[in-house]
Length: 158
Image 1 (cartoon, rainbow, N blue to C red):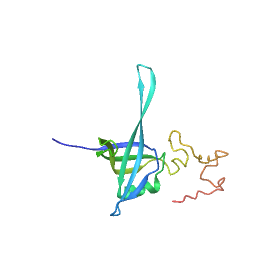
Image 2 (image 1 turned 135 degrees about the horizontal axis):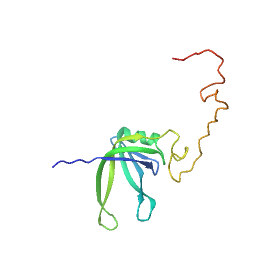
Image 3 (image 1 turned 120 degrees about the vertical axis):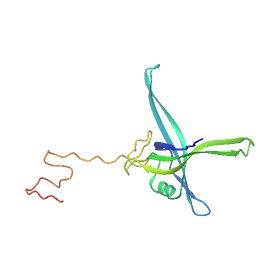
Image 4 (image 1 turned 180 degrees about the horizontal axis):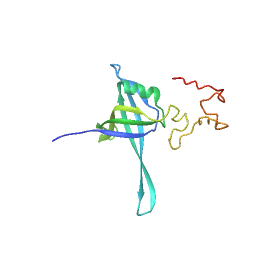
């Protein structure tokens, strides 16, 4: 019987990554990911949304990159595998378990300004300062990249 354990998730970070190092020096980052699903409910005739919260563990260079560049609210794509952690509760002595994702590949999405301290980055409820708005060109002859009106000549930089 064949086995296949692959997860691909796109969502927003629910908290800043927590990076630690093993005694051998390997970086480990724990991140929380919120993944939204939207659908139309025909019975109630309205649009509905649910959010699933997933814990992700990143190892090695991926963990270091996450700690350096990611922050709460940032969009990210994670490829990885499911892993079931089991342990015994210290207080009750009962067996506990938790399903999590071990990230094998990570891709940062959106611009650098996204995130809790940037322009909001699509994170619902994220505050922070917004990016300054670019001024619109005053006339059709002026564009965002021009220093001013053209002074003649067709100088092409390539």
